[in-house]
Structure formats: structure tokens, C-alpha cells
Length: 164
Image 1: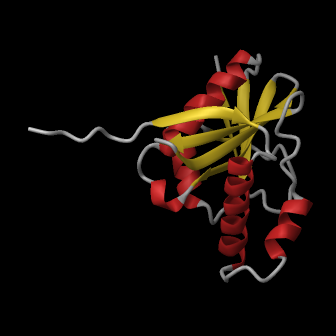
Image 2: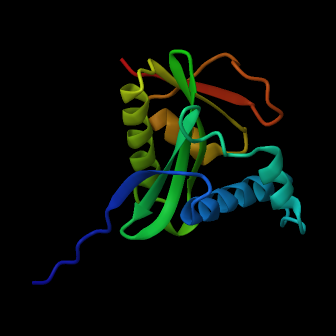
Image 3: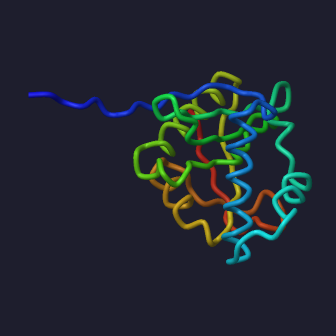
């Protein structure tokens, strides 16, 4: 009997300007724009959004960017921004073709390991009301809703996970 091995998830730190990171961050922003506006993106809209909300601080010393690969294929990303005693989770994204296969869990496990190693006592994040799948993922992994700690234009729910 022949069995087929399941694809595996791996994560690695990347600079936001590396080709796989650029690809994934662009796909992330495209999905955020399309879901928010409930319509296809118009020409130039994604470039404008990427310029208004850059990811270039997701590198040391201010943060980090993790890429997830499902086998060899770039499949997702997540970023951390360092704060005094805690880290902010941002840019969590798994490509649609890889959803439901454990990529979100792999990314959360990896960012939590990196945050602990950097001395963070907690991870916080904000998210939008329409991102119900993301909110469910965070809740499944021990993130609890907290009062607002930020006031961004898209922040509607705030979560925290203690890393004790």
C-alpha cells in the first residue's frame, strides 16, 4: 500500500522586500481591500494601500516578518512589531488555496515562539469585524478579546494572548 505524505508547513524570517514577501503582502492587502469595499480593487488601489500601510518596519530592530511555506510553495505570512513588554501581531494571511490545512496555526505558533524569545510577555492584535475567520482562529488559539489599545481606522476588535 502506498501512502502520500501530507504537505508540511515551515516558517522562516524574511525581509518585507524579498520576492516571496512582496508577493504575499500584496495578496494580503488585495484581500483586505476587496473584502472591506466588497468589490474588486480598482487600478492603483493596492499600491496606494501598501504605501499608506507599509510593512517595511517588520524587520529588526522594530519587528519581524515570517513567511509560511506549504512544502516549497509560499503560502502565508505574519508580522510582529515590538513594543515594550509585548508584540503586536499584524499581516496574518494564508493564501486561499492553502486555507484549512493548518497554515494559520503554524504561523501563530511561530510568531509566539519568536515573541517569547524576544522577551515579549504578550501578543496583541487588532482586526476588523468582517474578518470572522481570523477572529475565530485567534480565539481557537487562546487569544481573548480586550479593550481597545489602538485607534486605527480598521480596528474594531482587539485581542491579546499572554505568553507566560
